[in-house]
Image (cartoon, rainbow, N blue to C red):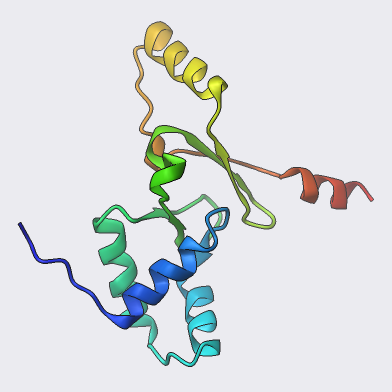
Length: 138
């Protein structure tokens, strides 16, 4: 088994995103937060650590149409992020975990009626969250 690589940057990134389970952040946002905490990592180091965390299935990388950057989401084992879809607000970036009985209904329907099995880890629905919709209605 391959040895897991640890660094203060990797640990910081994992802890930082772990405290923000309902958010997705770009490498540049992580870089800014790191600098505020006194860690002076360059973006190449941050990307390298993000790639390792994605490979270790501790983070999910998301690229949504119309966005230039990749965004990273913490894969919390207690939230079972690989077995449900995520709703992503295109305005504020909030992540809503669709971890409810309806998810099973959707999965069962797609498999039974369409022969299609969802890969939830890489699937998300993009739209506007309740708060952003309310703000835009004002």
